[in-house]
Length: 360
Image (cartoon, rainbow, N blue to C red; front, side, top):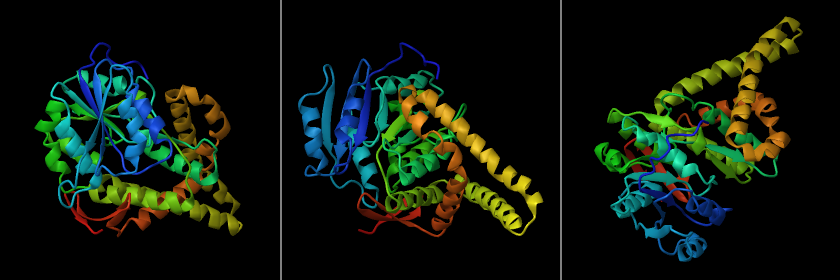
């Protein structure tokens, strides 16, 4: 959490794709527009000019914060058999102002602090860095079983980021030099794909450059969810991961099969009267709960303004871990043979990491 390099704040373009109305959209966009960064423009990009989100974005376009330029980019249909989000990103990249040396990307469902963009761009002062990423943390303001379960489930992914190379760049908080985007042929990697962040990661690493993580660019994602919203979303995330990053997906499946198998064996032995199995069950459960406690502590350091929230709901990152482990196994198994996903009303078939079929 130490501050990054001071003084290196090159002109930047911040690109935010939107689609449809969503809770907190105006507040989230305003948090991005009000960054304490000396010279940046913000491009809000949609596929069609009649998208319902345009009405929410219009006041921000008409009265941007002082010294900021905020523009709406209408992307149109985009490349064939390519994810709609990627089509929007490609159109915005093409319309970024010539003076911007850095391109940054954010999602519309996240809320950020005023120094977020500065933190995201700072590590790029080292020309040996290919891309910089943050990640998200879910903060359901009213708690609730399913929203907290989603937050705990997602926190295990957040826990995979640390010092050294990041496992991947996350599309809701990533930045790279403009020259790197062109040298790594990111636009070519995006065309025909659905996942913008996995493909950008592949392109940057293919150019021999690392992706690094900065905790100061973490994003707070508020909002509620139900079981019917959380489980399909989680399965979609893991389906995309299996197709785009099988090197992450398969070890994850194997680990959860072993982990859940050990838990189930311990419970069955205890139910059969084998009390000596209690230490084995504890050995299977306690390390995960301990890691959950450390993740909670790390998140509290990254979001000090949410200390009261962690005081109310921080217990979930410890006591929901055994259940979340089984949810992970369910999600892995549900995504094992799946290739079709629905993303914001559009159905795609993931043929490979570079080939997609638009179904409807």
